[in-house]
Image (tube, rainbow, N blue to C red; front, side, top):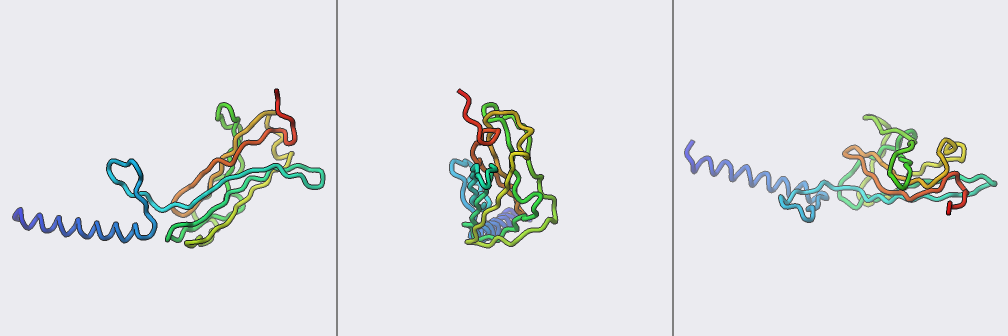
Length: 170
C-alpha cells in the first residue's frame, strides 16, 4: 500500500473515531480537568451521602442515606436489591481503619431499576442500637457505595459517635 493510501485510511479511521467519540460524549461525557492527554470521563451520577441519629419511641437508630441524581443523558441500571443496594462502610474516624461494614457488593443480575436522565432517588439503610453494639465506644466515619450497571460510586456520609446517644469524650 502506498504512503498516500495508508494516510487516507488512517485519516478516515481517525474521523470515524472522532465522530463516534463525539456522539458518545453527547450522551454525557466530560473532559477531565488537568488531564494532559485529554481523556474523556464517562458520565456519572451525582451522589450525596448523609447520616443522622433518629429517636422514635425512646429508641435511637442511625439512618444513612445516599441521595442520587442523574444529570447525564445516559440511562443507568441502579441496583435496588435490599441486601446490597446501599453499602455502608463504618470505620474508626481518626485512623480510617475499617471496623466493620453492613451490606455486600451487588453481584451481576440482581434486581435493578432503570435510572433515566433527570431521575433522582434516595437509598436508605437503618441501624438499630443492637446492630451497632459490637462497635467500641468512639467516633466512626461512614462511607456509602451504590452500584450501577457500569460502575460503583461512593461518597462520605458523615460521622457518628457510638454508642448512639453517648456524649463526646473530653
